[in-house]
Amino acid sequence: MRDIWFLITDHKGIVKVAVLLIAIFCAISIGIGVYTTSVQTQEQQKQEQKAKKKERKKQIKKSSVTLTKAQQKIVDKYDQSTAQFSALLSSNIWATYSGTGRTLYFTESSIIIADPEANPNKVEKPFIIKGLSTEKVDVGEMVNLTRYNCAYESDDDKTHVLTVDKNDDGTYFKMSIDVENNGTNEEYTRTQAAGSFDIDGIDDGLSEILGNAKDTIEDYVREQCALFYPTAVKASCNGILTADFNANEYRLDFSLEDSDEQQLTGITVIYHLSNQECELM
Image 1 (cartoon, rainbow, N blue to C red):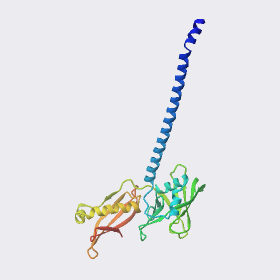
Image 2 (image 1 turned 135 degrees about the vertical axis):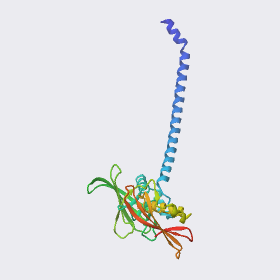
Image 3 (image 1 turned 90 degrees about the horizontal axis):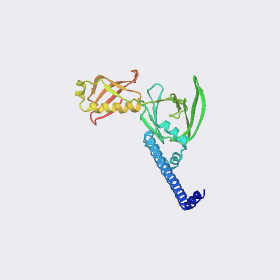
Image 4 (image 1 turned 30 degrees about the vertical axis):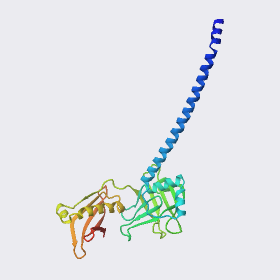
């Protein structure tokens, strides 16, 4: 025992040094751990912010509407639920149930109303969310839907209301809104733009007559269908070119089909020879 006691006594200094070194090592490890965690947290926050900005850019279309300072202040101060609802609107296309006629697009601060039968056929107005609430509703056979009640301001000093009903799995969306401000709401459904779009019916003979106008006409048809008929996947030309040399223009008729090969509508494209531009008749 005495030998053991002397051994411990002789090594007290060594033990103290060892304990001190262990304490220093632990302190350094904790410090490094805290620093690393802090750096990781900051890096994660940066990545999340970048991801949010990227998603925001993807969801929100560019607006050409100039807001007042008061309106911009409201948009900048959207809370999380309001910003999410705004993203829901802007990341989708809203079409009438028939699939033809008026189509709505949203940006962060505006609503775009596209109607091929209206003049002008595209109108953009401010869309500023002033208030948002939710409730559970039953609509016919659709039960336990979440209804968003959105109060918004547009190009007048009045407050308007739109509602959006959705089910829990996100397969059902219905919007009710009065875009004409005539006191009558119209119903819209969320729709996905066609992933592909084909044009046929312009044969070699017709292509030879049209020359460079063929590409201009086809590009125009694609643009107009993307705007007014987002569910169309195919435009078929009837192969008949009507030339009006008094008006200095060509006319071509197309029928539009959806992914179920159902005809949506027909359109007539006028190509002006004088300025090489197109318009819908």
